[in-house]
Length: 556
Image (tube, rainbow, N blue to C red):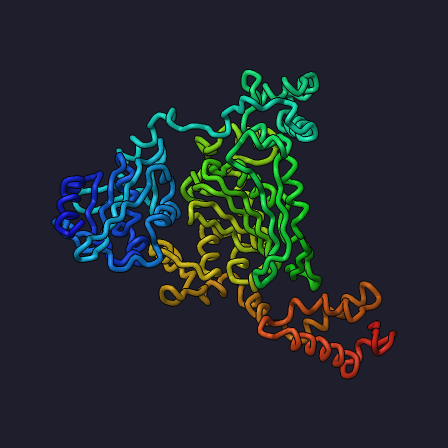
């Protein structure tokens, strides 16, 4: 259609701007989709969804609806655009979210009409960590009254996918070992029922735990307890957990796929993860502390959360991506229902509802997960206690991805600050963002600047020197650049005094990881050789009782 015809079409179908319809130029999608809060595409999507849904007409002049055209589509297409929006708008339903594209035949201008669904029951749609609504010609944060109306909406429209039954499935298609493990874990969670549970047969147990409804097997029962061949009852869904091991260069090195029963698969996936020992210098001693890179319960909690909170209606699989460089990620399709991790960490209450209510509640009763709030809080506490970076959450692309880092990042300031009891977890999280070179919003910058925690200009902030001094950080900062030679020599001597001798391999394991990060591998090896040479030839504190090829250093 011509430009005039398109203008007339838009006037007849989207005749005026109101809470359900907005006309905007948005001529450069690269900068306009997720740009300034309250004035970009995702803010308007939030505002329209938080009413009754509606339409966003892009590529037209505000007030007149004149055809301007979108000049820069960037890499967006009508097909992928809804997924990009979903990744930036928490709680936005995917059903009904679509783009209608029009290109004029005479002036070759393209405009898009984004059709936006209404928010789900009791779930305001959030963009830039705020829920928006229209007020006159501008957007404002959702008013208290409107938010209250959303939060008290009835939940009868929310279907629990996991509670539906599979009419043709039978109890015989459930795995006996999985059922036995479930019974054992159920007794752990319900010790008062331990004697009674012993009297239940499998059908009674499954009925009591709501996995059988009127004798019919539920989808939850198949996911948690079903034999691999039982997943045919979930068609077209093909539930699967994929573990992949990547090298430091992100090259795939190994992989394996796991199917239900998931109550067994969680342990099988955990067994594949190379939970190596990590060595770092603990305060108050010259000897390195050895711990596993990842807390076992954190791994199982993260993986089980993927199962419990996955949006199965989207299809896809759960992915566990392990990297040899010291981090591991867990990804599942779907949105993060609580809205933000910050809200979960601050809340004292468990979530009011789940996407898969039966599945999540059953996994809690089978001791597979904590409630979503307490499980996430525990992951943050464990990482803080280890002086490791905080867990990373990524909600883009209509997925939930959590990454655990199993090492100290150059003994950065945030880890030292975490040992200071006067700092709150909120402050540690913000400083952790600085450590990871993540972008800070204006409010976060104000908080850190007010406490003199950071210096520099946006976006190149760094931890303030004053903080280092305040927390007795300066000595630890020197450690990240390397200690004086006397420190390494003292470590070697203490090792020999304790164990009698030290081989070349012993000394390398003791010292190499603590040398300055600026040295390459060859320089570090030379540094160790020079230390040993100085101790034996100049200081004469040690001597070789072995051979030149296989030295055994003892105290002189």
